[in-house]
Figure 1 (tube, rainbow, N blue to C red):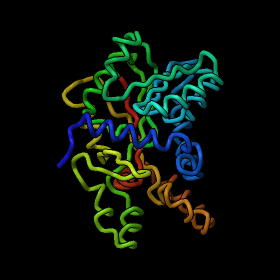
Figure 2: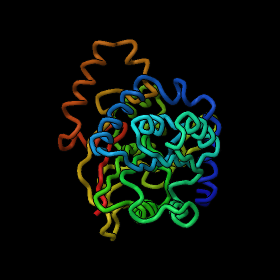
Figure 3: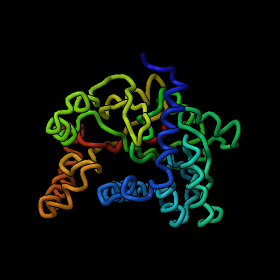
Figure 4: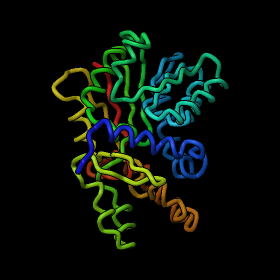
Length: 278
């Protein structure tokens, strides 16, 4: 029986709390993750000219927030996991005045205005890296709450865990874990194990995500989307890259060339979706 949404959110927060102390190590920041992170940084930086105000949605330990803070931007680093926010706050101490760490989940972004005084036109760009938005029960509510504090013309750059990941299916079929191989094809929130805990996750194609995010409101429009790690293995298969470095280099090149091609852009471990506030 599927638990209530409040219980799902609590279990998900506990799962990320449990890995927060080691998340800056291989579990959360191996070379394949950093490769994806570098692509996201490049895309985000392309939209930033003057010093800007950003929101990091699901900031984790604050690696992304610290990167953008060091470029001169102010970042509101938000997360639903108290332990992750504590570590992001420690990074904030290294960048005085540039990072504000807040324990606010994306499902409750209406609090940003009512409790933290983020008014209209406060945010120039929001980003979310490595799938925190896959754990949000109502994307339409998050979209409206974020639109209320984002200036017209402001951008949102999200990386979302995709539905169709050939590497993952092949990996779990080879291990004869057929039930796990089918997890991404579930249409509702589904339990995924991590560190002895459960993360309640929903998987999307880019169109599914955009349709739920935009809904009936006329607040956001899609600029483009691209795949992340279609030919390159997912981060948990980093041993493949280590064992076959020449092949890995070719796969990186394939990913770069095909990332925005029709059909190819709908597949991969993650996809990156860029939207603009109307």
